[in-house]
Image (cartoon, rainbow, N blue to C red):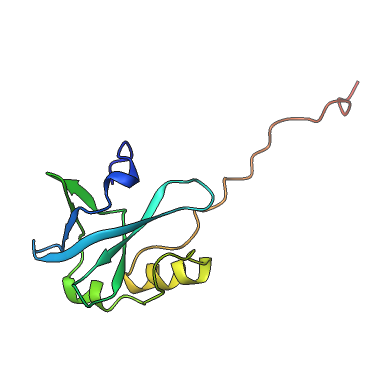
Amino acid sequence: MQTDIDPRNLIGRKAFDRTGTKIGTVDEIYLDDATGVPEWAAIRTGLFSRDAFVPLEPSELIEGSLHVPFDRTLIKDAPDFGVGRHLSPDQELQLYHHYGLDVTPPPPPPDRDFGKLAGTEDT
């Protein structure tokens, strides 16, 4: 997702699935609690339908529309947590699993020997 886009400018834009089929309209944007980066979009899937959460990464904004690289059926079958509320870490994990996205944390940095500690030199 382009990081220079104001998430408020996504609201009201049309959203399409990976085949170009219209999913609906972006209803809300959810930011990551730790970074403040836009992470999820709630897409209103129809006049009497619910909102479906879609990941903004790896989605793209193309010619003013949000293009989500998943099938419409998978999007419509996403867990329903309701909109207007905070997504808990467990709910986000459920969404990541639903979309088959990698949720494993990055590996820890390698343990390196940076030399001797001050005051421990041999004389």
